[in-house]
Length: 196
Image (cartoon, rainbow, N blue to C red; front, side, top):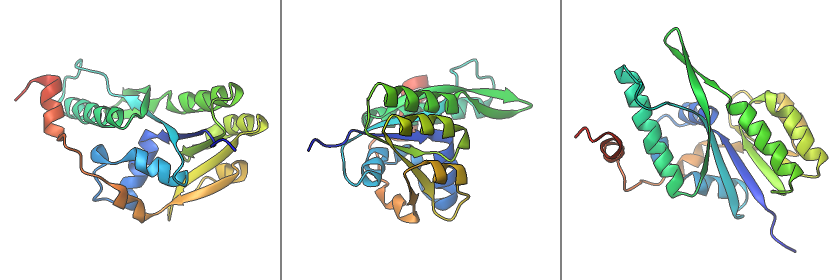
């Protein structure tokens, strides 16, 4: 029997905030996303997407924006090294606060497109966004297995639990998958900005 084709989708902002809450000491710029995805999929070979609001390059006037941009570029470099496909929404700043836009739509679109074009057999979704329910229902209607990956000890989307085939809880042990990267944040910052 051929091996199942598995897609793992990270909702980047959701993953970041919940992972930091569960394990504050973890350094997610150096995290082994591929190893976590393969662990969730029981060691199977997986395709991985990381969906996140993009910090736009230097129209950045303040230090916070420049630092956010540099950190995100370091993360993107690290994800590309792991052969993770990066899908971008955008960030909208309102009254000094950044809001992610278009990421949930991108995730939903990729789930529906992948299911209808038969690009995967199972999809593991690391997100608690209940707006994904219609996309999940469409994928299940196309015969695909949808798996909700939630964080242990945190709010769980009851809608996703109900509509997915199963729920897997990411526990504190996931931080042991953290693998140091040979590239430092400062190296990437220097590479992209030539500041040092």
